[in-house]
Image (cartoon, rainbow, N blue to C red; front, side, top):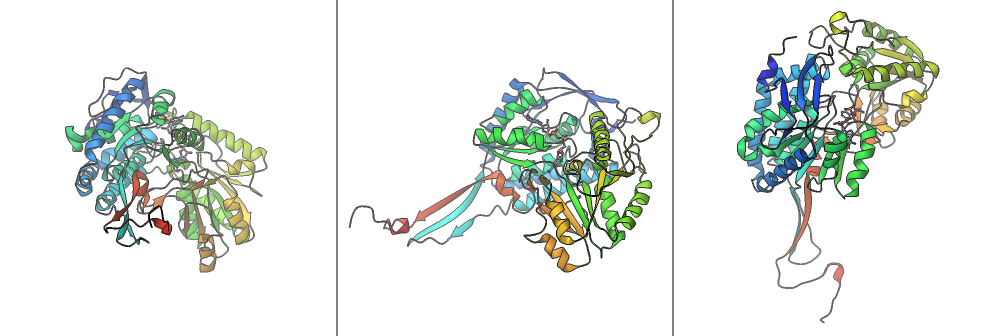
Length: 509
Ligand code: NAD
């Protein structure tokens, strides 16, 4: 495999795992970074330890104290240049995502584009960090709400979006006047190094400590981040298991957390659905990123009158999906990130069978040839279930799609909501009443609810996140920026009396 593009991203054979404005001489354990494509070694990273963490945090905090004084549109100007630097490196970043996370190149490029998009969004936002003026009940008083920078934002990211999660958080945090401290997944450290180098180059010596980075074990470096009082907000993306640790631990020190956790997303296909459209949406949602997106379609709730027809069409479409090297243009399904994920896939398929599910296609390891034999490739799988089996309620991070027949819209909505997670959902129908019902207060309970498009592939303009065990956080577009700032309510008395609120008389006449 030709890895020469790595040099253009500043990735060497050996790399430091901590950045505090300068790359630190880290002395932690050596992390060998292997590609999920073929198990080959890409590079090594010398990980950060608790001492490195402390230095990165200190530098990020000290730089924040100066950065917050820069007018927001001036901060936006830096973000504009960072976005342009992402543009220049888009091709190489897309390849690196494919190499390190195993996404197909098109999806890697898409992820790089998301970083560019969120930078663009943040630039506009830098002139729109608006507050409110509120009518005061007291004469000659004015009241307003303003938003101020919050401090250093800790960013914990998952392997499956190795560059975009950081960009969603950091581009907003920077225009909001914050600094960032990134702890990426140990499965994708090179993506983190590349992004940090790009941003640091633009920020220059004066500001580069704003994009702090620590690559290190959860139990040392991760814990230091969770417990750091200088980090008022932790934005954590990953499994619900991780969220259960991060949420309470950060809350214990009265820190804030923004949690973006697991999903178990359903598509409802009603009797009148456009099946050609539905098949395209379902296949992209279910097998894209080899089923390793938080928004991956995992459940299909299909009207009983069309379920056999739809299933047949899906099996045909699955048969046309090429599995293999994600850097190869023909490939639609790359590897799972590692052997542990493939074992989870095997286990889920076996559990589904035990629980009465029927494997319609897939369910096995894929044959990919000698060159890729050390990768964890699986076949995209469809399991037909008579009802919501226990395994269907779990998120298995692999391309397994469970089909459950339904009789009515009410039943489908109830099943859509009958899982612990609440991230994404969709309905395919031509009936406006059914569509609106699905989007109503008595419809889907998810953070994302779509009509006639699938569950995955969100745009950055909307607020992204989900309910229940997905964690309740929102990031990216809309007014998600507010979480990166602290709110201040101010009352100004411009008269010469001191009337009290609620008409209280306190002493005097
Ligand atoms: P993971 O939970 O194993 O790891 C995620 C991150 O959390 C990593 O950086 C990891 O090092 C860190 N982490 C884990 N335990 C920690 C601890 N005790 N202290 C500090 N940090 C800790 O998840 P993963 O396998 O990398 O990613 C897959 C999961 O992420 C799936 O469940 C997926 O649904 C979820 N995800 C959610 C979203 C979303 O926006 N909702 C987006 C992407 C991925």
